[in-house]
Image 1: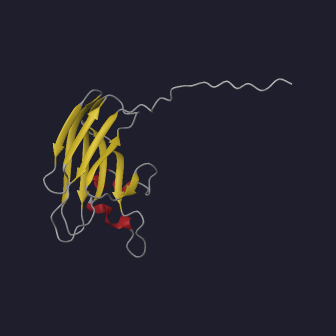
Image 2: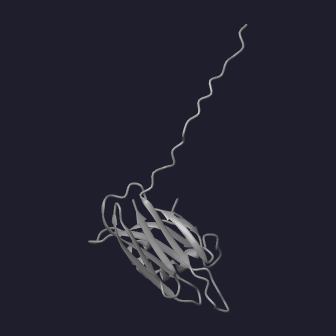
Image 3: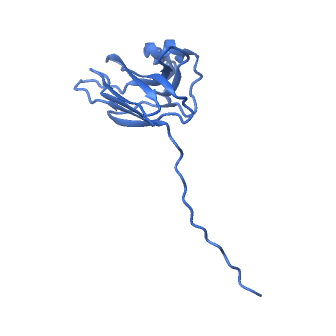
Length: 159
C-alpha cells in the first residue's frame, strides 16, 4: 500500500476591497460628569437623496423603562434623514457608544461614483450636540473637518 501524499498549496488571501475609510475622533472633554456620546454616521448624495446610515452608536443594552433607543431622536439631523425609520439594532450598523479616541470605519464597497456629504452627529447626556459635515467625491476624494466641542477631527478618504 502506498502512503498518502498531500499537496500543500500556499495562496494569498486578498483582503476585501474597500471604497475608502472614515476616521472619527471623539475628544476627551474636561467635564465633571462625562457620558459617552450617542453618534450617527451617514452618507447622502450631495444633490439630495436618500441617506445611508453607516453607523449608529448608542446604549444598545439599556433595558427597562427607558431603552437606549429612546434617546436616538437627540441625534436630530440623522433622525430626520431616516433614523426614525431604521429598524434597530441594525446588523453591521448598530454598536455600543464609544469612549474618547479615534475610530476607523470603512466606506461601503458598493458606493457609486459621485459627490457625497458625510455627516457625523454626536449628542451627549448632560452635554452638547454637534454635527460635522464633510463633502467628498468618490472615487479619489479626500476631505477633513473638525468639530468644536463634541467631535474632533473627521476625515474621509475615498478610493
